[in-house]
Amino acid sequence: MSEYTYPINDILFSMLSVADIDRLNPHLDEPVDYDLLDAILGEAGKLTEQVIAPINASGDKEGSRVEQGEVYQAAGFKEVFQAYSEGGWIGLSGDPQYGGQGLPATIATAVNEGVQSANLSFSLCPLLSLGAIEAISLHASDELKSQYLPKMLAGEWAGTMNLTEPSAGSDLAAIACKAASDGDVFRITGQKIYITWGDHQMSDNIIHLVLARLPGAPEGVKGISLFIVPKFILDDQGNPDQRNDVKVLSVEHKMGIHASPTCVMSFGDNDGAIGYLVGQENQGIKAMFTMMNNARQGVGLQGLAIAERAYQQALEYAEERKQGMKADRSGRASIIEHPDVLRMLMTMKSQIDAMRSLVYVAAVENDLSHLADGEVKAKAEKRTALYTPIVKGWITEQAQEITSLAIQVHGGMGFIEETGVAQHARDARILPIYEGTNGIQAIDLIGRKLHADQGVEMTCLLDEIEMELQNALSTNARDNAIKVQAVLEEAKECTQACLDSMKTDSTLGTALAYDYMMLMGYLVGAWLQIRAQIASSIHTSMGEAEKTSWLCSVDFYCDHILPRAFGYAHGIKFGQASVDRLNRIAFTR
Image 1 (cartoon, rainbow, N blue to C red):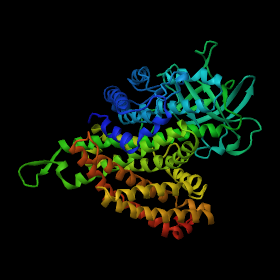
Image 2 (cartoon, one colour; image 1 turned 180 degrees about the vertical axis):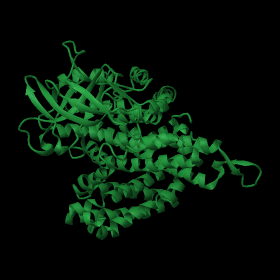
Image 3 (cartoon, rainbow, N blue to C red; image 1 turned 90 degrees about the vertical axis):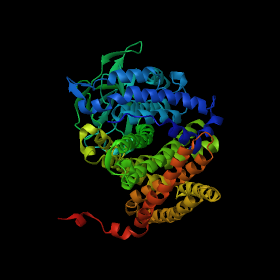
Image 4 (cartoon, one colour; image 1 turned 90 degrees about the horizontal axis):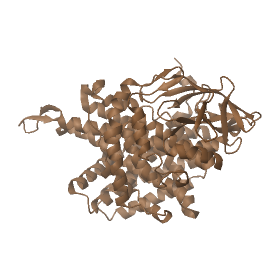
């Protein structure tokens, strides 16, 4: 089982040279530069490598348990959470008014990549807390912010997101959890399922954000409100006091992320759980989408992170494992010398490079959407919305392939749990499912993003890609730029085909959505690989070995990964008739 190494050089290169984090500086009181990033990420590397990673495998084996309505996490997790909190990591991008450090969220993303690679199960607890913090920051009253944000940003209290119910999964309109006014508070009753880190002993309080319906609320999503429901009700001094009417019924037995308790939660079995309204009545879905969009980019980051961890383990194994003879028959060869193993490793690496570039480009746009104003803010908001389903959907699909290839590189040993590499594949499998399945991400891209403005923002993105490709024709990336240009032309045609389909039959049009999301993922990944190739060739502090590695990555991506886009384009342009004929009868046995 390999040790984890935080890839600080790759992260810094993606942030500075591909995502151009310097674009944030005009909107910051204190500019972000290499020295600041290097210092913060250097410490993050130590935390992830030395503190968080060592309990990954043990947590997977032990899991969590429920005793008398309380969830107990795996050994070592409480101590690691305490170290994480005391280091100020959860408050890195938080509002300084409430104890946060006020740094751009892109920096927090870079830290979280390491946390998630080191231990995906552990990372889900701070991820949900960060989403809850953002929702409270943007939508709650000043009183609620003052009560809850300082402790949450300090990591003393954790947060959760309570959406799903037994009869309401992705269809939030079916939510049945109820809320009733009781003086200055509300009484919450109902059940929620699949609640990540819904209970544990790592923090002094857990702040649940719960969707529920008030009496007489409109039907559907327009009648949902959002409430803070703390595990412990606060006393007059703002400290956890009386236990709220919230309990855990069970934790799920899952394929992966074993150390992350996925809870069935019951609210209000006795007098009703006390809750506090966040924002306006019946406007909860707006506030909850703040958490969901934050989480969707976070899940895309998880896809990158678990892929990186699996790749590192596969690379180390390939360098050490002896199998077969060297080409010149001079001795036994490490399997990394075999062409098919090289193919698998570069299939992993080239996609990870593209995935990482997209994660940080999207993160910078997201920061601009909050920090900037005027036209810059408006453009960043649109671009963030466009990127989010691609980040979540495309990247988590790549994570399935990459973690599977890591097992394949190990051969038979990869199928043995003690090797540790199988855990990454098991953990990664949840990523295309939660925070909205990838089918939902695809429908979001083609519906809310593409169709809603009739392709205006997507056209802006495609034009930007084309402009950079034209400029790349006079650089060392010329040959690869020509290959990407061919896919860009396909993407333009497919964009129009999708718009036409949505006009004639929106239901039928969404059948093309997954192909479109994947097409755009491969195209955007290739575009950013071209940017990386140009940047690496002129990078003054990058060694020749690193430059060669980047060139190999981009060449391989454009020759072997990018052509997949043509298959998705073919499905969009020519496959609509076969989709049109599909209904339940097609699957009759």
